[in-house]
Length: 373
Image (cartoon, rainbow, N blue to C red; front, side):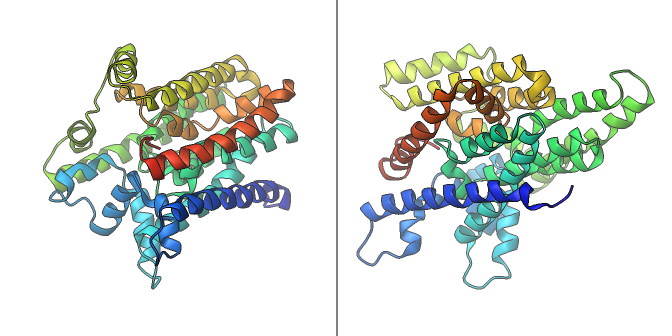
């Protein structure tokens, strides 16, 4: 892959502008609730809230079963390992700042890779819209937080890009790392299998089996992590048990049982934040449908991965954070960019609405505390 300026100039410009916007919005929220002696960390402390507290605990203490009832096993290891690796040699850099640095660096790489992936499916204007929409999406502030989304984006986008170029071992290696970053990495398995079939000429035979063999790296990574947690915590299914114990999440089929629960939250308990999650579930579902309808243009492997990434939270029995989960299903932004290309009004609407909603969601998540990012 040639590292020409055209590969990185526009996505890095989007990265810089969008992160400046996010940091400014978070700092304004921190300013409204500051203490008299507030410093920079106090202004940006929202970036370490919610799941960020868990990732910092893992970065500092690992999967210690005596901490937080052992529920840290619900989170994957690669992001906190990256935080620890950065913080260790740098004086004055603790897990909070290390996480923010890792997230920003990974997001810059991720945007460049998504841009390259979009160029294979869209014209130049469409590729630019795709990375812009992703960077300013209403929940895209998590790409600057102590969250694993940025690292997952870079690894998953690199995985799909390499697979499209026939480099299956490299793609599977990145896919295994993505799976060790977020469980949504499982959605890469069928996408890679499809690509292997395409590379084999859509026929059975030795070429297909050679293409499928690298994909075993992903279940091997999952098994290795599960065995480590078993050794560390004494629980055979430590991740599933931590999810159930700490968040009440488990396999939930059929999916409408999840929706029924959410309706109860809205009408029965008055938790209107679930309406936000409903809206994003509908949006992601629509964009996945567009991906499938235009799969010849936008890529079948992209559609397969996005479908799995959108559906997996339903399998976990939760609608909470649906807006954030859709960011990991990043090919949906290729679909949105394609739609905006044939409906220009959608381009303006997306840009205006994204910024306004991002400001509102930052306030609700970090100040009021009623919206889970």
